Amino acid sequence: MDLKLDSVGLSPFRNFTRAEWAALRADTPQPLQNAEIARLQGLNDRLSLAEIEEIYLPLSRLLSMYVGSAQKLYRAMQKFLGPEAGGKMPYIIGVAGSVAVGKSTTSRVLQALLARWHNTPKVALVTTDGFLLPNAVLESEGLMQRKGFPESYDLPALLHFLSDIKAGRRPARAPVYSHFNYDVTPNEMVEVDQPDILIVEGLNVLQTSRPPKDGKGIPFVSDFFDFKIYIDADEAILERWYVERFMRLRATAFRDPAAYFHRYSGITDNEADATARGIWRTINLVNLRENILPTRQRADLILHKGGDHEVEAVALRKL
Image (cartoon, rainbow, N blue to C red; front, side):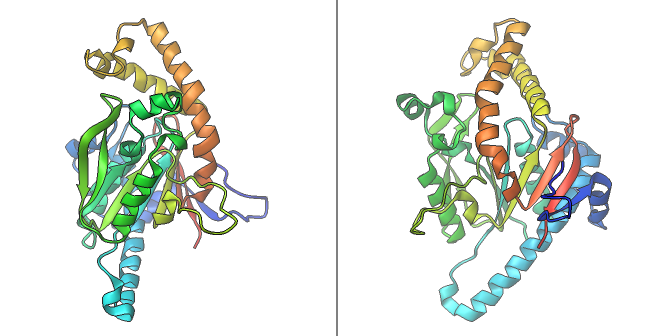
């Protein structure tokens, strides 16, 4: 991972090797047991104790410092504004990256670790999958092959949810997505009730568009974030991980006749491999190149993974 803008060190990031980053753990205790680590990892991720200790504990320490500073600033603002300061304002962390890169695992690990810090006992996690337009709408608008692209989301609903969170309204409600049904679950919502931290995970959460000339455009999703994380990996590695995940699902969840992708359970291995690579190259890779990867430089922290799913390098935006 080379994030230098030129040869004279004008990058906005400070780059760390894995060993350099691991040293920043200091004396942060490791609170997770092996059974909990196993529950936190995704279908095709490998989450080891070493990964927790060397990558995520230093990150949780850093985030705890950031949140603590934000809380002190908010208390100062309360003192300045008095009753006009309003209610508690959660700290929002955005987690972005490609399909199959491990966003969900990273988000769950951070949720588990950050909830152990004394000043942030209440940590909520929401995925933007719930804000995808229902399949019926995508079908009617010819967007099923663009599912996961920015235009396939109910952006006003997502912005309204984040606005409620930042305003301290309780509870804020987010729709629920079923990967089994490959669709938003009708009339089902998850309530988020004034957490200390909210983690928002999604493909395009760091994306922007061209700013309006009159300065009156709607905000971006990332405008609500206090800290932004991008999980990175090379394209060839991401394709392999996507295919491996597809093959595992074909042998498990897809076998259920009620599953949306049940039709793939009966094809041959070679057909399944070709199908997965076709989906990756015509949909997910296009989305990565057009919409997701261009947002990497907007992150506050970049975790770059190697082929074994372990983070090899970290880039932290300079203050």
